[in-house]
Image (cartoon, rainbow, N blue to C red; front, side):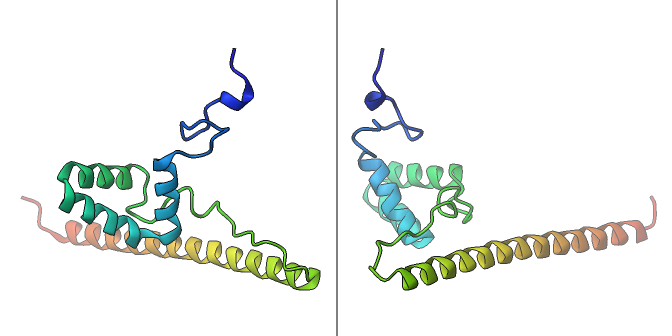
Length: 134
């Protein structure tokens, strides 16, 4: 039997010790965005090509390559209290509003891409239908 302090977390690290060096590196790169991941990949290729290839594979597998990481949108910035409850409440309300606007904007872009894809597909089908049958 294992105690709760020795159970493995979702990322495969010991929950009592926190994330290992790879988890800390991943979190550090996530905080800095996609450009940091790309720089790490390029440096990996320059130092030892299998490292760069491994980083590229991880970026594709985790969807970091395409800006769809499941980790970053779920994270919410929680700053320490300033001691001023009115300001803290304003800051939390503003952050929530900005996150909502960001989510709405991402949804809008998704719908825009879907509409563009549909228009291009419809145009292709119309052009395909105009060809003489052989």
